[in-house]
Image 1 (tube, rainbow, N blue to C red):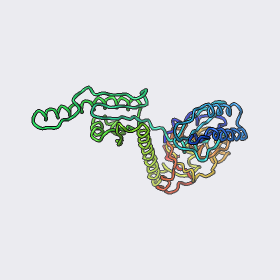
Image 2 (cartoon, helix red, strand yellow):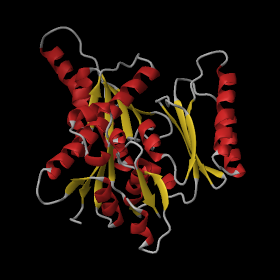
Image 3 (cartoon, rainbow, N blue to C red):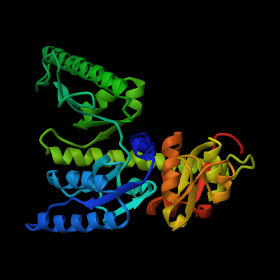
Image 4 (cartoon, one colour):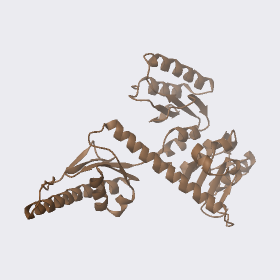
Length: 364
């Protein structure tokens, strides 16, 4: 998991409030229940020591927003009188909670908010295509200039000539769409290209794309008459498949290096903390179940240690924090990749010592 999207939160100094809400509105009394739920969370934050300005900022964010149109969760982080993260998630947090602490509850955040995947989506047919990309305002329509686009029944030389003209029209129209798709993929740095449409059109487009675009392309079964919600679900499944493949690949790399004697992969909280302090962590693998209630001492995002004395000996003034959140913060602020083991990955791998393992950039 890449954590660029979380860096602003991770760099917050001073105490933070983290709120995880079920924002779903499925019953007639949902608004009333939400008010009661939030009132309890607000009181909990105050009881944990949250300052009035920060609680007020969260109160405004929660109460002044419109309810979502579909089942979802909501994650907020506030510090110093302002909200620094407010995002929705398809996952409904369980349990809902409001936590005040030295740092944000980052391990719960990454467990509930999927990593953003920059995606370009194209719906293709013989006449052209429709492209949805992060750098466009709405849907871009690419209408091919070439006709005819429909074959006719019959035989003889004249019909053969017509068939060839149709094939050439398809090819030219597809090339126009491919050119625009390549531009969007390049400009946005997309990690995923979802191609929808009938099989022949999809295949023709893949063949016309650049190597970069074709390499991230996923073809999906989706007709032009299907609903927007159906397409959104298809795209999200494709993004989740990509996230899972990325996690699998990073975990396999960790396992391969751990089995070698060169010391470039190792398990344990002490090793992970030392790797972050020495700017040597390339990838950190975290198993929340294995970590349990483990704690670390932290004086800054990457200044972490198992014991307080390790940091006070360096002239620092550390605070005790949740180990999982400390590791996520260190990864976000150092550019390290994060792999959080879920039930599926946990079933594919043997336990990680102390609930954490690291791939090193260089030997410690």
